[in-house]
Image (cartoon, rainbow, N blue to C red; front, side, top):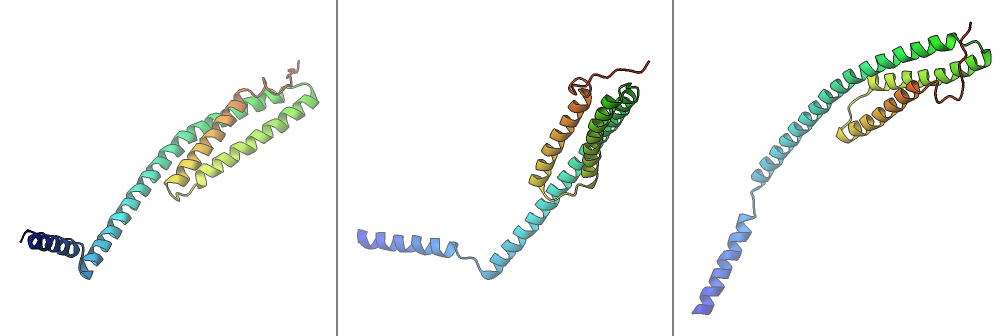
Length: 153
């Protein structure tokens, strides 16, 4: 008797597990549709977050770009007062390289299109690093050039 009750209990338990795991096709379809709707909503929210971050990042870097424009103007003024033509030409070439980098960075931030969180994070890291390098180069323009400026009398 104990043995038949155990077999019956095992059979009922197994049947319960099997039937509880079976969803009707309409339930499966509804669950799939719900999952797709939730995924689309999450994607839109993530895209909105990145767009907001991009707007803030552009504003922050617009100030840095203006500051770099000012520094480039100051450097150009000092170069124009250089008496030695050879030194002046080397300084102008060096400044032209930095101006080219500056224009490229400005173009990149202005034209950046959002294509996902990972892509945005990679762009932001790379861009920030290059902006910092440019700023350091402009700050140290005359000290690291190995060229001593001699003003005209």
